[in-house]
Length: 95
Image 1 (tube, helix red, strand yellow):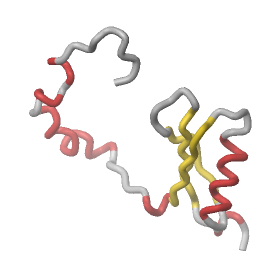
Image 2 (cartoon, rainbow, N blue to C red; image 1 turned 180 degrees about the vertical axis):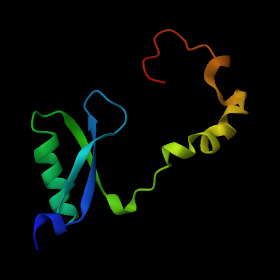
Image 3 (cartoon, rainbow, N blue to C red; image 1 turned 90 degrees about the horizontal axis):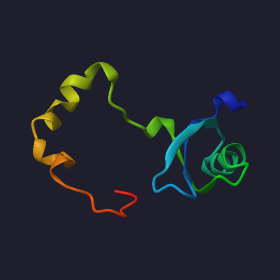
Image 4 (cartoon, helix red, strand yellow; image 1 turned 180 degrees about the horizontal axis):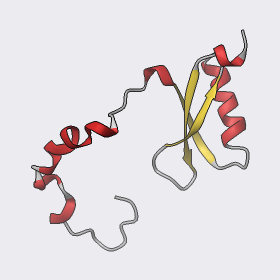
């Protein structure tokens, strides 16, 4: 078995300054532990992260760009969900 037969994993890293994980790339690995270790070696070589998630690409479900209008339209009719009605107090860094 070569590495292209291994499952594809998506890698998400949370930076030391950040609040959320962000997608940084993909890699093939034989198992979950190997994926985690390879992600650490490939995507946090310069001590950039404090947390890593690896997820088999097989388990990701995504909306399609061509369905954007119909998929996201319901949120447009609910203006009360938009934060335009609220003022953010000074000194709040992340909201």
